[in-house]
Length: 195
Image (cartoon, rainbow, N blue to C red; front, side, top):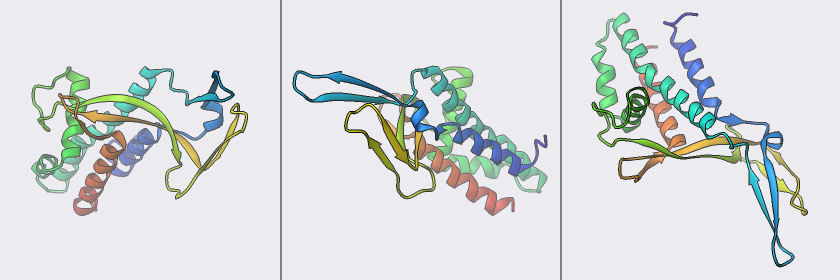
């Protein structure tokens, strides 16, 4: 394994991010029904999210992989004759990068973190699974039978998502938004400095 290859590193990051997607919707969804006093029936649909710790592990693995790119890029910058401080300066200007580093440090060292980058004491709450359109597609369909006991779909996936909040539980962003902002920032940096 070439630990210095930026492309390999990014592939591992993308694989980690994609671990929060499950394309086998039918096999991993659970339908329960509840009869009501009227002829109506409540249908509850859940998406294999009974194991909260597994979902937490997936999210924290993503956060760690995103945060650890910082040190890798600093080495790449130094190897190319650039100042590694450029990476730190870019992090200081990006809320997403600071939040990810603070969350990763909280996981490694405990909460709250002493040396805060974001000054917001971010936390991950409301970890949940939901169904949405598969990545890269513009539309999807989800069908529930008239009896409420089976369903099918087209172009859907189960996602793990969460809210990122500050120390007062005020929502900063979703996990999806954080990942997307991170990807935009680092892709711009890599394309600007390391191509």
